[in-house]
Length: 310
Image 1 (tube, helix red, strand yellow):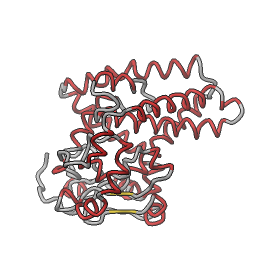
Image 2 (cartoon, helix red, strand yellow):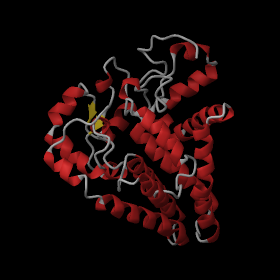
Image 3 (cartoon, one colour):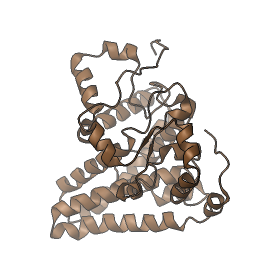
Image 4 (cartoon, helix red, strand yellow):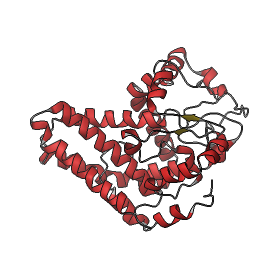
């Protein structure tokens, strides 16, 4: 979806990228301190802070692929080059996420790379254990505990198929990922005092934190503009996700920097809630209360009518 006209204040703030640069500095600093110093007196605290910094870095990586904090794509990529999240190449994240921003394809089982819906015909052919696993993954508890592993396996399996078919961008994305991970591994092996098991756990927890945000960002709906959620959370999760909890606003204005989204939402709140037909939650506490042990959506896409094997 292309950007709609913005209030003058949002346009003026677009040029000021110091909040993103400051957040990058804080994030790298927190990650470094948690891996080197904090684990000496509390491994538990080190895991928590390292996970938080890793998830924050992923949010900043999302900003980079959308054109922040500079207008130079290579410089933006360089600023988030160390792959703290380890398991997702920047180039693959960029390609799949920008494909996801084709809003007319949101939630499509084939054309939206970030959807959790399946073609009903595919669902019908799954063995019982796969169906049970998918149903558990559609509860918030399942998504937080098993979701990182399930999502990673699905992501890598899809990329493996593309790589075997000779897709050059997939191959290039994973090749460029090698030095991005190598630097992080070197740090952990030669500088950090954090135990390896604790670091691995922190990466998994970071992926789990990100699953909280993505759990209900989109729903099946016959109107594409009504498929994207808003979570009116301005607390710590709003900061961790860089206001991407205001997801409908982000999809309507993907080039707006994270720090301008809350003001933009508040000044046009009625418009956004009307556009997405009230797909809104007050805070993540409401999400936890409603869906911790209950699925928000069915796994087979309820509106998918193509029915063709692909």
